[in-house]
Length: 99
Image (cartoon, rainbow, N blue to C red):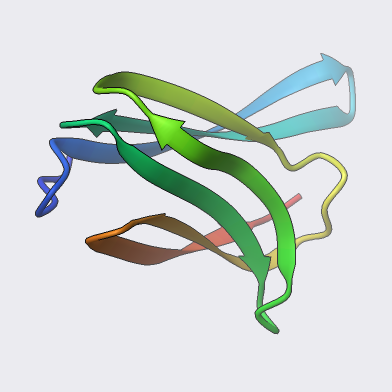
C-alpha cells in the first residue's frame, strides 16, 4: 500500500512475523519512505503514554528511497505510535503489536 503525502512522494509500512525457531515469533516492522529533496528526517516509535521507545532515523537524508526496520521482538504487545517528521511535514500513525 502506497500513500501520497504532501511534501513526500510516499510512505509505507509493512509488518512481518517470521519464525526463528518453532514457537518463537520474530516481529519486525519495515518503514519505507521516499524523500523528494535533501532534508532533516526523524522516525520515532512511541508507546501509548507518549514515551519514546526508539529512534529509527534522525538526520539529514538525501533524496531517494529508504527502508528502515524496527525489531519489535523485545517489545510487549500493545499500541504504539510512529512519527515521521521533517521541517515541513509530520505524520503520526498507530501501530498495534500482537504477539
